[in-house]
Image 1 (cartoon, rainbow, N blue to C red):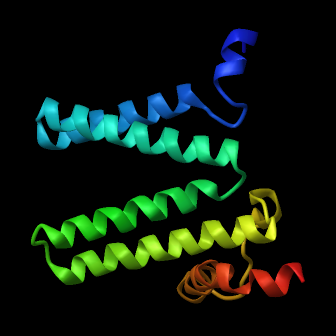
Image 2: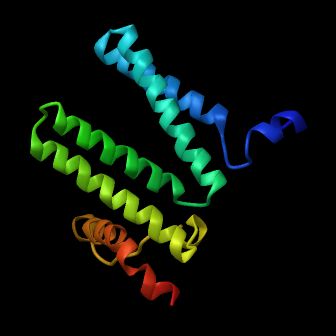
Length: 150
């Protein structure tokens, strides 16, 4: 990376990869729906979300993007319910936002990076028992970080 571009773009930010991913999202939506405006708008919003969360991760630390995305999801849930959307769907979005915010804040608070938790979960059993155990372990991780680092 050139030195001029290196000063503008932090090391943890993969702009080219995010643009390619947004183009794939837009192309997929265009293929499914046929509306170019909808596909371009969704791709632009997706790219903006990716860049904001990656920038937060690069500037603050690992999992800061989760906290930012959780805040955005909470704001979206509140605005969805305030304009007359169904309360249960807004509640589901708010619950996901709360978990993402908690996950990001806890990982930042205890200084746990992605490299430290990047080990695949290993649970005995078949896919029917191992997959739910791995999912529950990941969902419980923000609550168990205080025991792990202490």
